[in-house]
Structures are given as C-alpha cells and as structure tokens.
Length: 126
Image (cartoon, rainbow, N blue to C red; front, side, top):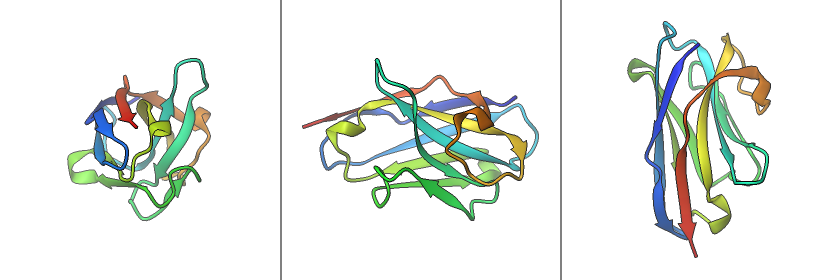
C-alpha cells in the first residue's frame, strides 16, 4: 500500500480557487493511477477526478468538468487537484487514493483503489 497525505483544503468564497496536494510514499515508483474523491456527511463518497500513471490520461466527474484539473508530478510523488470556480456544493472532505494495480487507466470505481489519505476539508461559502 501507499501512504497518502492531502493538504491544501480550507475556506473559500464561491467563485474562488484552491489547489489540493496529495503526497505519496511507501510504494516504489509512481506507476499507478491516482484519484480524488469527496464526501459530504451523511452521503456516500463520490468520484471527482482520476489520472493515469504517466499523467497523460485524465477522467472527471461531470459535476467538476471544466472547473477542476488533476495533474501529477511523479518526480515529487505528488498529485494535485486545481479547483476553480468553486461552488457551495463543492463543500466536502476531499480524499486522494492510489490504484491497487500498476499501469491502469484512471477509473471512477472506488474499489479499484487500495490506499486512501485522511482527507482535507474544503468549504465554499456563498
């Protein structure tokens, strides 16, 4: 498994931006897909975005397409989620996750991921 630590969450006004970071350690190399998910209290965790091992393929939930951008910097074992034009409905705890398989395509299926971070809170005020 991979140890994942998210950072960058906070409070922002609607229309603002935040960049989340997810630092990975423990599993050698960066040859696995990474994903971001979010969860609101009382609701199931939902997919936000995912990126393949090389950073050449990305996949987004319809609700964030055009506003959020996922990227990765393998030399730093870090994945980012740039969030622009934030809306109050984006308020949630955001989690990053690492795919259990090497060289897999990005996926929205949470059971494909076997390592999860502790989460970072994002709050968007109206």
